[in-house]
Image 1 (cartoon, rainbow, N blue to C red):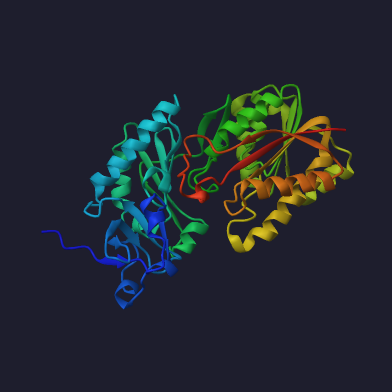
Image 2 (image 1 turned 135 degrees about the vertical axis):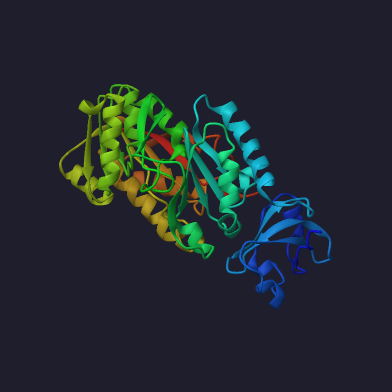
Length: 398
């Protein structure tokens, strides 16, 4: 007989209605944290009840996290095992196979795919798991085994790095769980070939979320001189070159990322039109302005400047500064793309900061297009944090 799960309970003033309507998290100040609850091991499964002791579902609990409980299943009697995980992965896979012709995509996007705190990116026959919640760390073996059941997946990497794991009290660790890797993995996307370092690169090695924004930028790039700032492995630059750009200059602070970008340019057959420049993005944009450099398309895709609410004000100032420095580099009638992956900065706040920066850079602009993450990064409507990526495309006047 399966032992009864522990019970955790919302405080009387906590908003149970939000949980019933699909919000997936319970914050520490919303839960009764008596000695018994505080003594639960991180990743423990428990039945969540409202203040009137009515069950709301089955959650995973981490007393060390501000998100003390995450909804796993609306059925309080659910059994979270390898079969349950495999069912969630199968459902996610069916969506991706409908969206994409080739097996290069985000396979699991955490809460939006019903696997809280779990990110899985697929690179052909290789896949990278980010177990960013305590339960996933505890069940990494079952996650890997369920993933291995996906046809064509032979190599599985655990990428245990990043801010999210720190907030869960989890140690950093990247390890090859199954299969073998003999170097960067080539990834076809938008007519370009990217080189993804699955063991040593940022996050899972490549950012699939920008795929539709790369494609929109490529439409603007035909015959253009392109500047890709914070380029990582050449995201926007290689897509632009594949779309017919005259030239592209990629700026990044990581020599390793720029080396991968160069490999991607060679694999795409555009190396003769591609150049890189290593350095601090802000200082490099200032230097380019002093050199009188101008580009028909400038793209700035920085890391998250506002990853949390306490960092929002400073992050918005940083986004404004990016826009202020980038705007003078755009040739008259050219285009400027500004991106944010900060969930704490909503679209309106980011758009306003970008517009202020463009104005302070001495330019006037039309907002042409607003892009978001691709559909392999679905949003959970009740969770604003899942709508993290914004890409603003402007046309700048003289």
